[in-house]
Amino acid sequence: MEQILILVREQIETIGGGDKPGGTIPVSKIAVMACLNLASNYLKLKQEHSQYKEETSSKIGELSDRLDFILIDEG
Image (cartoon, rainbow, N blue to C red; front, side, top):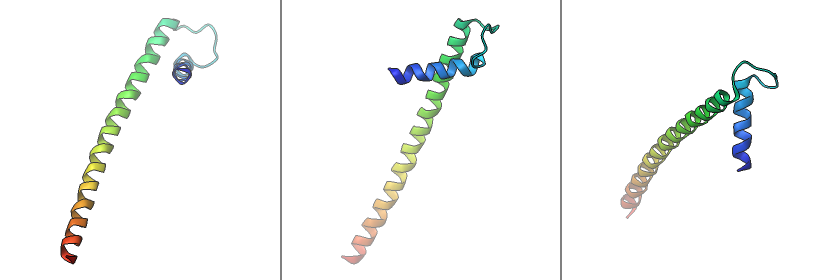
């Protein structure tokens, strides 16, 4: 939970301009923008993870096929 709060604080500081008091953007809009940024980052990571799983699965399949070929050839 603490890590989530840290992420939200970082997003709010980034969007709100850091430590500048009295900004022109209402806090509610900054909070919504921070949540949208977090959601966007999550979706990007989810897509990258899915792509990584596919590539890894493909490489494992190729290595398995090579091993089968080598073991059959030796047998």
